[in-house]
Length: 144
Image (tube, rainbow, N blue to C red; front, side, top):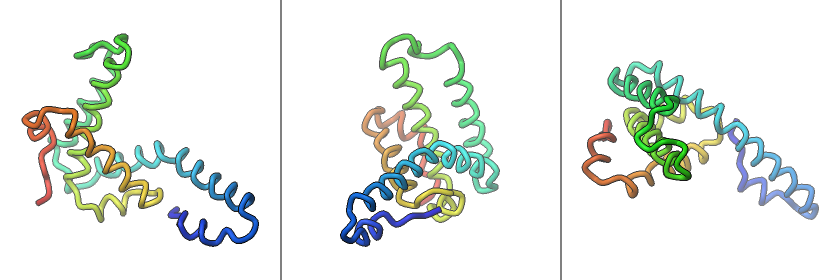
């Protein structure tokens, strides 16, 4: 379901408003499919033999932690209550996505390839929020 937005912009021709609307519709469609595509990617990675049992267990524990009413920082605390959950999820997803090659990620991803690259870049930003020793311990580099 890959769509070339750059090519579409170049092909807009004289009827820019109609083409811009079509492009906006395609972008909105990709955005709406982001979460289902991401969940499918995670499911496929969990079934992949190259992902270690420890990484799979860590992901399961993270999901349990996020869904649990007991948190390190309670969710009732505005902003910070949600940030600790999001940060943990980002770190575990980074570890899981690093455990396989980018080619495998592309194979399992149903959306636009550039969107997958953006997801990887956004998740990588978590290293600037977490102290390096914790980041290095939690997010091991599985590929050289």
